Image 1 (spheres, each protein chain N blue to C red):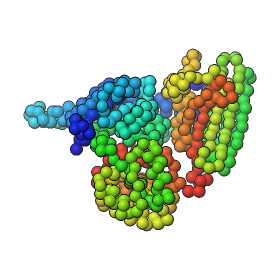
Image 2: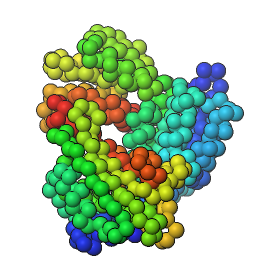
Image 3: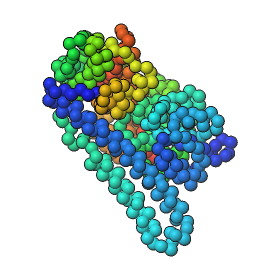
Image 4: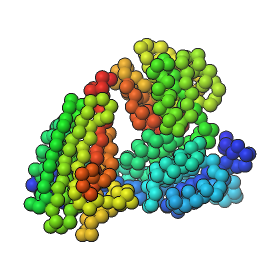
Length: 247
Length: 249
C-alpha cells in the first residue's frame, strides 16, 4: 500500500510508525534465525569438544566456546531491547466505538471520485472499543487497500460494514471491494510482509499492519471473496467482551 | 530420557525449516541426544518425507515460503492426527503463532532457544502426555470435549482424589482446574497436585479470583489462568504455552 493519510497527521504518524516497526520486526526475525543457527552450532561443537584432548589441554578452548555463547545471548538481548520502536509508539488515542473509528478513517482516506463508498454500522453493547487512532488506522488501511484494488480509473465500490450480534459470535468489521478479487493462493500471499499484488511499487505492508493491530486487540484478520461482487472481503473478527458476557 | 518409538527403533524427528543453517545445526544436536532425524527444507518436502517414512514427531518452523508451518500442521492433523507437532518461530508475536496454538499444536518454541530447553520440550512431547480436566461434571465435561475435538489427549477427573490418582499415573503433564463455587477447595487441590508433581503445568479457569491474586500466582509460576466463561482458543493457547515452558522445580 502506498497510501499516506496526509489529511490526518495523527493517523499518518501512526501509519509510518507501524510500517517502520513492521520492517524492524522482520529484521529481528532474520537476525534471531542467524543467532539461533550459530548458537546451535556452538552447542554441538562444545559437546563434541568436551570429550576431546582439545578441551583439557588448552584452557582457552572452553573459555572461547563460553565467550561465543555469552556474546550471542547478549546480541539477542540487544536485538530485543534496541531494534524496536516500541518505546516511541505515537499515542493510540482514547477508547472509541468502531463507528467513531470508521468515521475518522473515512475522513482521512483519499477516495477517487469514481469510487463509491457505502457504510453500514450495526453496533450493540457487545461491540469492542478501540483506541481511536489504532481503530481508525485499521479501517483506513483496509479501505485504502480496497480502493487500490480497483482498476486505475475504472471506478467501483467499497463497502464498510460493522456487524455486532449478542452472544458468542463477536463483532465483525468487513471491508469489501468490487475489484477483480484474488485467487486463494494470492489471498494466502497477500498477508505476507512486503508482498503486493499491485504492479506499481508498493510497500506491501498494509495487511500486515492491519493484522498486527487486530492481534493487539485479540481480533483476527481473514480474507475471502466478497459476497456481493467479484472483489475481496477483509474480515476482522473481534472476540466477545468479557464484561458483556457476564464473566 | 530420550523416548523410543513403539517399534523400539530410535525416536525419529522430522526437522522442517527453510533456513538450512538452522535445520542442520538443530538436527545435529538432536542426534547428539540420541534422536534420529530427517530433514525437510519446506512444508511440501516435509509432506513427501512423511508419505515415505515413519516419523514420531515433527519440529517445524512457522514462516516458510510456500505452505507455512500452520498449513503443514493442518495437513498432518488430517492424515496422522496422533503425530505430535512442535513449532518454532523467530517472531515474538504473530497471527500464525496463535492459530497454531489454537488448533492443537503441542507447543511453539521461540527462537533463539537453548538447545537443552528444546530437547526437554521434545522429550515431553514424545511421551504423548494427557491433559487432565478437573471440575464439577457439568462444567468440566464440555471443556474436556472441546480440547478433545482439537486433537488433544484428555482425561476427566470429577474430584480431587481422581485428579491425584491421574497425576500419580505419570501420564499427565497439564491440569486444567475449573474453579467452581468454592475457590478455596480449588486452591487446596492445586497445592496437592503440585506436591505430587512439581513439574506439572496447571491452568486455572476462574471467574472468581481477583486480578492481583491471579497475577501473583502467575509470577510465582503456581499456575497460569484463563477467565470464565472459558473461550476454547484462549484455553488451548494457555495449554500450548505451558507445555513450552518445561519448568523444573
